[in-house]
Length: 442
Image (cartoon, rainbow, N blue to C red; front, side):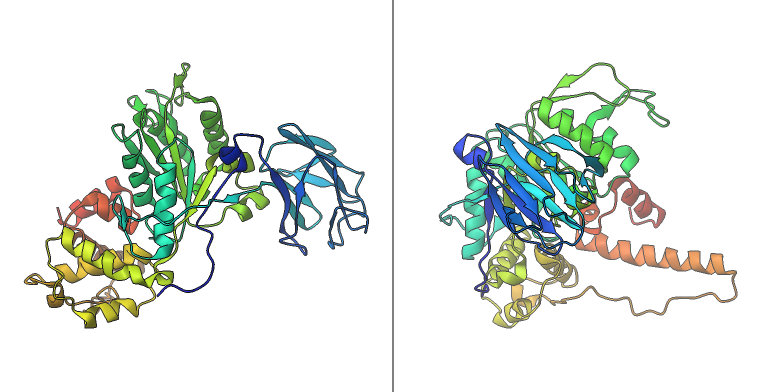
């Protein structure tokens, strides 16, 4: 059963809930006073080590009266009070600066952020045991379903958070299919699988001759998703230059392909996902706080499978049903085996275990006939290490053996579905196809 630990399933910016200016707090992200916070209201807030400060810090590199922050309608005015070590914003020292919600400042060894106060969504667990292709019985996941159902009713930007394999892309696609945009395209971009140099072209497209290798015009993800939903996975892998252009596209609802003169209006709903908390990246200056603010109007956390073990049985039954394998009578010894595993790869790992078990049990007629292996089958044949060859040639031969064995297993698990294989092993689809051809697997 799930643990009793309290989990915040979903939060939303206060302006989305109240349709007004964002309510914010000043939050210490990193440093000796990490976790301290104070609401930003009408009166100025004084930061420093002195006892009369509103937010008292113990960082020895922070001055007694270091910084003042005051609200100015939709903005926040940060004023350095001639501090000894200065105040940094996005790596540059400031004297006075107008900041938006989401801005992160560095004082000595301390990072503070003007944090939109996320309000926990007050939601009643869904009565449904599924949402799109997501299946669950647990109370926690039915709260997730309720949040997903809610955001499907509008075009609000959503940030899905969760460990690898928890089903973020499935959740994003399910939101799209339940929304008014379901007749439009759903375009998924894995930001971590693309070289930084190609990311802007993938987002915005390019014209012929825009760069070396651009032999023809290509529409980017924004235009391909026109009228539908754009899903940005692995958000933390977007480099700073692309972050700036992405923010502009979101704010202005216009994009310009690489090398083009003409801009295009866009009508796209954006759903983003990350398996890590982006606050640290923001504090380090590697992720723009204003972009994060735009993409996280509603944040929904997908809990790991080990914290909701009661979902293992219904997910397993759903996976087997899709493959036409009856689950009755239920083999409790196999379910117990699945329930005892920690599932570091979450639902994706469970799906792979089931797919692998089906591939290794070709004559199985029922769930009970499957040979369940919790870990990938290792190839026991000894690697043929040719010590009679030069080092580089012997190494290359081993790589060929590895590639062939690895790809054979992946190909069998996914019944030759290249898109599924590409997502599972996190390899570009075009490169995957070339490797499969190289080893005569297709």
